[in-house]
Length: 315
Image (cartoon, helix red, strand yellow):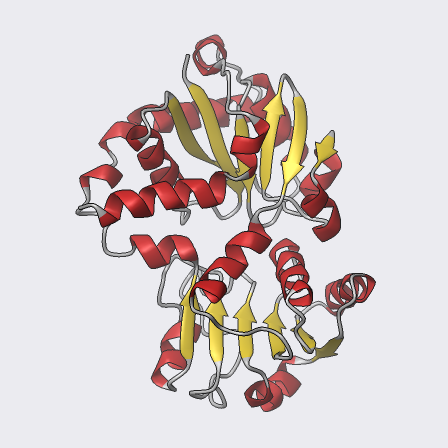
């Protein structure tokens, strides 16, 4: 019986997760499929009920649900508890366990480039669930100070309080102040969704230079306005790991062709019907799933990307 997994969030159309996971499943000869399921803000409870009803094996969580999803969990791992946000959930007969792999995924490209975080000043744009994982990573790696820039001061203050609890040194500045102080920071990190719809950079890049390391967690498009302008100024650029490896291969690599995910599109349609209380008996019968082990789900992000990167490298 096919096991079904999903990524939930809004917006979700940009996500490469279905392509990545379905390609990995085919490569590893696993009878699994992976879909994108749009759940708007304010509808998470109904969305979770729908996923449970079709016995989803597990799902990834993205904007805007990483923090709110915590209250729907029956259990969570240590990293998830510390960060206070979740990005991966396993479903064991209706019992949901949460994990957070964001911190590991965020640090991976930094460490692969042998870049030093210790004693560095960090400017962080955003104060959501992803920002909490980034703060945890930077405190763990002993950054000297994290400057938080966010439109909503309430959320910025909450993030600063969280950082203080885990031993971090933070400062909160306005967008205007950030533009003036940006050259004092080694790392400039965008943890917001700004750029996903080709919006202008959330911060002025005028004072970004060759000593700056600019990291944008938006991976679709890969060249956000922040990335393009920072690159022109000579900064070192780090993009999301998934797009960094897959960009340019999606359309031409047979491993990533869309032909084998027709079934996933059908399942997505069934989910939308279910979310509207139009439950399909065929969907429930077809989607009854056994699922991977909790440990497999907990490391899905890094393992799946690794499998795909290895496959692409052999082409």
